[in-house]
Amino acid sequence: MKRICALGALAACMQPALAVDIKTGDWTVNVGGNVNAYYTFVDCDGGEVGGLALAGQALGCAGKDRRTTIGNGLLPSAVVTSATTNKGGYDVKALISIYVHAATDSAIAQNSEVDVRQAYFSFGNAGLGTFKLGRDHGIFGANAILNDMTLLGAGAPVQATQRGRVALGHIGAGYAYFGHYGQIAYTSPLLDSGVTVDVGVMSPVDDTPVIAGSAYLADSTPQFQAQVTMTVGEIKGWIGAKSQRLDPEAPGTPDLTLRGIEAGLLYQSGPIGILFNVQRGRGLGILADADQGRVRTTHVLAQGTWQQSEKLKLGLSYGQSRNADDTVGTGGLKSNSNVTAGAYYALNEVITLVAEGSQTRSKAFAGARDKMNGIALGGIIRF
Image 1 (tube, one colour):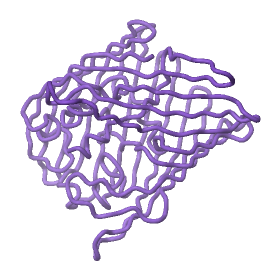
Image 2 (image 1 turned 60 degrees about the vertical axis):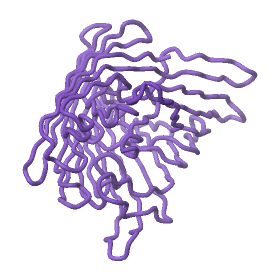
Image 3 (image 1 turned 135 degrees about the horizontal axis):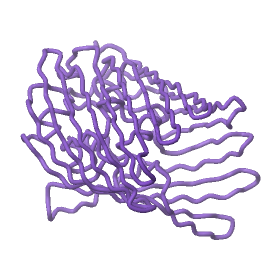
């Protein structure tokens, strides 16, 4: 279970609301982050779907029919520190972020597990573009998760992950987690056509199985990720891809080259926001890279939001993650889906209060179905 929980340590990718800037010589040191907590209650019906069935009792309700947690939402609480300057005509930046979680199953055990998911430096300028070296989130899948309305809330309040880490949003029910990699990445300047290009060479990773044992190891070939983004007026669209060769651990195991493609669209006009994203490939996994082996998986996310007033935003999102192959690695899981309705109220410049209701469903290739109803009430402060 520790492996699945580790997926929740999201980068604090949202810009701090009122981060503190400290000037020292030519450098500006910025300290920001967030703290969040949500009361979640879930009720699970059925426990017959195997594998990574997010709506089942094993994961959705952490082994029970019902469960309550007061813990983090999709984001962990975080402190993000960066230092920026301009040297020799280059904009230079170094960033380190530290993440912690709120909920555990003990009132006396130490809660000192810390994740450092970002530690990189970058340099560039308007003509050259920007180079980044170090550890950061992936390019593939970033637009989906960072524009998910449940990033400020909980989405699917899966108890097996929230108790000891975070809720899942639409991870595993709409998109695969974007992951964190050691990398050398490049972002092009904004071209006259409104296009930017991102490419990254990532440190190769092993498979991340949860149900079956490990079958693949990182090859000598790195993982490659790329994305082309175009912005035209109120519409932003993107096409992305990722690929990595993995070596079988045992003789006779079929070869695996992880391949994924992605396309998405974000439309924001006045109070109306629309998001659509689709990912498809072999070895993408339900949650993370190759967590089900060679299985072909499709992820779809659709979302609509309405800024009802200056302070209140309402939203409805639906996501589905579907396996095409019934293999040992899937544990019989055909699909997870989640629908979340949310209200996000800006109490002031730094605090957002959140109320969400959701239903998560899991289906098996054999026909069994699980259902989890959930609510999340709480808030987040960004500083």
